[in-house]
Amino acid sequence: MVTLAIFIFWLSVALMFHSYVLYPVLLKLFSAGKKENDVMFTAFDKDLPAVYIVFSVFNEQKVIKEKLESIINTAYPVEKLKVYIGSDNSTDDTHNIVEAFAANHSQISFYKFAGRNGKSGVINKLMAELNQALKPDDVLIFTDANVMFSPATIYEMVKHFKQKSIGQVAANILSRGVTAGGISVQEKTYIQGENRVKYLEGLNWGTMMGAFGACYALRADCWTTIPPNYLMEDFYLSMNVLKQGEKAISELKAVCYEDVSTEVGEEFKRKSRIQAGNFQNLGVYWKLLLGFNAVAFCFFSHKVIRWFGPLFIVGAYVSNIFLLTQGRFYLFTFIVQNLLLLSPVVDAILKQVGVHLIVLRFASYFYAMNLALVNGFWMYVRGIKTNAWSPTKRNV
Image 1 (cartoon, rainbow, N blue to C red):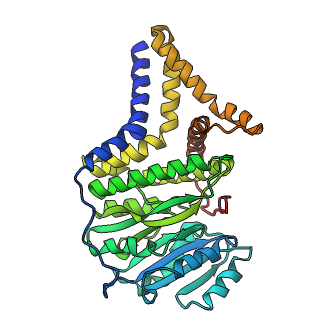
Image 2: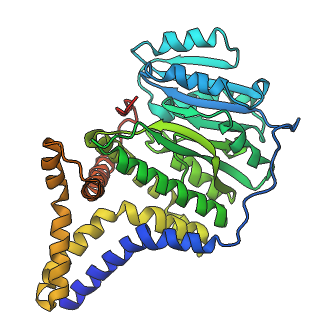
Image 3: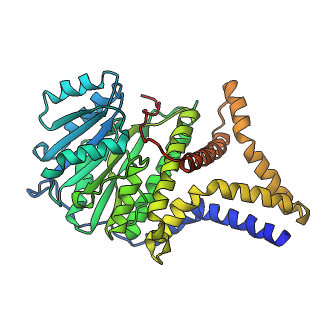
């Protein structure tokens, strides 16, 4: 029993350490001497591809005007730009705002869909509308209504598609609305870390593990219809690119801005939904783990270990109980684990009296989000009946 407990303890610790600490370090080491893609369009090329920006909206009256302005104010040639927007039966003032804006900008096509179709359902419908016009080398940009483009965002992603082996380019998402009172600092740190890891994966092998759905570009011939009731269509399309043998990369100069969530409850719901979608994707793409290649290494290290993180947290804790008689070291690790597990409770108490300890909240955030992974797994087990969503409450 002791031998088994030691094995489970160190396996759980090693896997979590690998995914969160060692893997990013290895990516940095492997990237030494690596060059970024240098086969790209210039901003003045006459053969710049046509770009179709596609996104779904649901009750986005607070942000949709700023979003549209950020698109139209692009440095990319506007004559090569088309915007397809689908409303998932919005009930606020979104329709009026979009229609008023579209009246003055012929690039915008707006579709109002009845019922709730979910983000992926709306994207499928929009793609069906524009599919006849698409050419294989055209570029699709998928984005969210609350993500604001900089003037260079579109060009910085599109420039890479001159390299025919590249099928996907992700934008660099920067956070706005960071405050000390909620979890926005922790969420911003997480996003920055993910941006860096995805960039290094792309730089090393062209194996970026899933673009943020907030904004990414896809070569048109890499598009595939998203299955019904899918929660993580961005990861589904990303992995399909890699499955086809194409490269997926991140462009740090393609800057976008997104308001981050400050409330742990809102982020818990979002992370739960993401985790349910993760297991949908694992059910489709698990065979990519079987290869002895960079895709399998990145998929396992960056994604799969983290998806099963709650199992490893429990494994380390329970096995540690059986090891308490094996010396002071295991007594120490048990005390540390209990202190970390109490961090969400302590943080909640301190928050009530206006005390915000950043380090403590990082620990609290980590465990709260892993609990969301458990909730998401049960959502997946029970079956995904719909992928209809409501916008996450953020600092706007």
